[in-house]
Amino acid sequence: MAIMTLLAEILSIGDELTSGQRLDTNSQYLSQRLSDLGIQVRYHTTIGDELADNVDAFRIAAKRADVVIATGGLGPTADDLTREAISEAFELPLELRPEALAHIESLFSLRKRPMPERNRVQAMFPQTARIIPNPHGTAPGIDVELTPDGSPSSRCCRVFALPGVPAEMIEMLDATVLPRLVEEMGAGSSRWRYHSLKIFGIGESDVEQRLPDLIARNRIPRVGITVSRATITLRIAAQTATDEEFQQLIAPTVAEIRDALGDRIFGEGEIEIHQAVHALLESRSIRLGVIEVGACCRVAHLLASLQTSSRTGMVISQQVASLSELGSDEEEIRAWAAGDLENALSVAANRMLRTHGLDRCLAVGVYPAWNEVASAAMMPYADFAMCLAKRDSASKATTVSLGGHPDVLYHRLAKTALNFLRLDLLKS
Ligand code: ATP
Image (tube, rainbow, N blue to C red; front, side):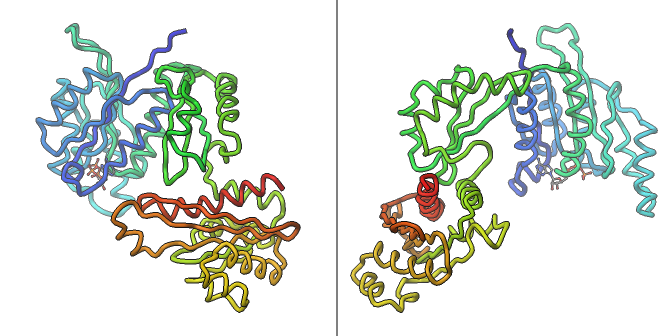
């Protein structure tokens, strides 16, 4: 069955956006919500506070989209032009709506203040428009349905205008705009659904090479690949009427990815690698100690953010500038001095394991100093050693050479250490 996809355009209005003073987060939010409904956002347009530009933007948007959502410009001041722009663009004279005026007056009387005359303008609506209630603000939204006027370029279009303040916009979107759109699309209609697989320990191009047919644009279900801070996400997307149908449709694709990538996949859905490791520690009732040497303690930082019990998971962490700060042990000091980092980490990890009665101790380093990372002429990199001491079996150690943009390097180092621990936990 062919599925008709509604096309949308988002208009963001305000000089503070075009001048760069404020970031347009409304467009991102609205696009995600519309895409969840299966509405395809084709354009983001940002316009300053000029009436003629706004009139043009509304006209253009209504010609090329089925749904237009505008935010901003609904306030009471002279530079709030959205009402006028809609009125002029679609030749719908403004009229006073007593129920909107009553709401605005009631908000002012709740705050025990007289309503300034200027606020009356917020109760003016283009003819035929429906009101979108704004329970917590004085700017009600506008909902206009445009029908074709017979000219070849005209089409049906639904235009919504919401306030720019994100909290008000979100509240009104949930309470009124999305339910009205769902009603228009018809109950039970298809929508886009998504499922993610999270991968660490392999490059993006390597993933593509192992799964060459997967990332094709017209494939059903679609698979998209993105990388964020050294973690790869494969996002599977398909348009189905129900969740069950979606699960059935994507099952062979998930199996194919699992076959190709095996335990490089650390989780499904919105999960990060430290959450996957934390879940393994908890499920196996493991008490973990962490030693980090050098400029930061990112492994401990990530695990501590999830700590739910004092008895399992990471129960102790130590950060030292160099291992000799820790070392009372001669062997450790000798190994450190000779640059045998794996050995020095192993002595320190085993000592922490015994002293605190732990099940595992992960010792990692050396995180390079930030000034070394920032001043690297080319891409900074680090030789990074990792040792895992275990209560019930021999320690394991390895050293990797890792590089990355300064913004990513520390994340990559910490995630590599967490992945080293995760792979060992999977075997135990
Ligand atoms: P109000 O009655 O509060 O004035 P409004 O519809 O007139 O509502 P604007 O004056 O255009 O809204 O914007 C109000 C505030 O909302 C802005 O100062 C800004 O902080 C925020 N804002 C506006 N547009 C956006 C956007 N696209 N993304 C994020 N924040 C926004």
